[in-house]
Length: 268
Image (tube, rainbow, N blue to C red):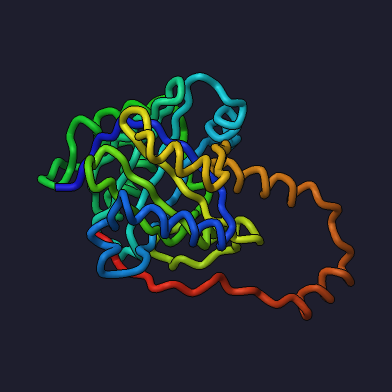
């Protein structure tokens, strides 16, 4: 059974490709690949984030309060309407991340968020989390806002499963076709396509990892995928509107740059 409640600290780091290769190589002395990554180099994660019509949740989050919360729908790969997905509440209190999620069918999840009416209970659901999300939906009028997807490689400590490190690449986003079932296409969030590494631990990180981070010159950064997507969208919306002739010219000459192709698998 998949773990549905997480309490942990999450530290984030941005790496270029060479830094990723060097650090990932050194990690193998202490960590091993996730069971899915032992069979496939990467697995795909797609997320649909919900927010108020005025983006209250993400704007509050970007103000760096002591407490923040958000709701997202997550799938592994591109799901069909009756595929199992996860509706997740993520909270952060004084640096401690609490994530609670429940399994749902895709159509059940859409209807639940839209109506606020809890679905008929089934064995794959977490009833307590359903109740918490129901209360959250009573507090906010939410709608789909942004799609975010990426490829992930995950590792666990050979000593303790409490320590996990993930590497995300090809982070892409869109604000149209807001359905997980509509495919995993989108624009690269960062044109430089930096690697996002997350160190996730229930307690403090081990001494060997602290030393390894120092040796490689890696330092924590504040990075939110949804937060950076929102700031990018706001910046683009403030760009001077192009004249009709400029728009037509750009339409004829724009070439879409595809993201780096990776092996992607359905992860359930």
